[in-house]
Image (cartoon, rainbow, N blue to C red; front, side):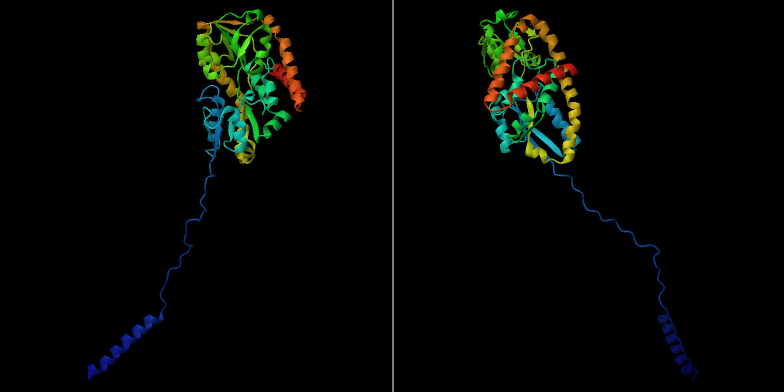
Length: 364
């Protein structure tokens, strides 16, 4: 009987315990700080590299292209690879006389010009290739050619080909090498020599016979006696290309002139470049002159001792050079008349050339 009474009490006690536990809410822990998550950032992408192509007649990297190569290397480095210029040598992209055509057609974005290779396309530039118009010291000559690219008529001449001249390559003053002595203007009689463009106009009145020899053939022409002498940028042409080996006599002081070699770019492409890239170019131009001087000073230090040991190196007498000056002045007047006849500002440009020469000679 007692067991029957105890059993229901036990069941009721168990049910009450279960119900009591179900009625109490389960204790939870609330975080005091919100969970941290990794910040979401948009992926950054570097600007697409700008790769330009350039052309030159020179067969490989060397003294005549060192300044452009330095510019290209620095532009790539200082833009962190945003701008790159690939230089193609040996006229592989374009024959030299057609460089401006290639620029205009967009076949490439850079070209090294020589004004005399396309006188019909750059007639006003050829004024810088006349005899005796150029200062002789390298720094003066480089600054003289830099100023030329600023003249509005020359700027316009290049713009006709969608080109802009940003800087020139220094082509040092031309001097004379020969296999016979040329001590006076009388010694020029019958003298057959290679000489660029109109520079020979001051020698012809004294009987010299200019012969146009392609540059790669000059050494052989001297060796075979086709020519008796040549002019060229001093001292590089005579040294690095071995002309001194075929010349018994080398003359400085003639300072007959030089060629004009602007580095031009496709203007529409240049104008479209990001401003930060163009700013790097402006920065480089502050260093460009010193870099050119460094290059050419090194060349002179290298070759002068070698040539002095191998040849008779002397100064062409100033009094004899003075006899050529009237013919240089005549060639300038003829050039002005030719330009004016074409409707071009020949007199204005020639006056600018002469005043620029005087300015750089007094300043540098």
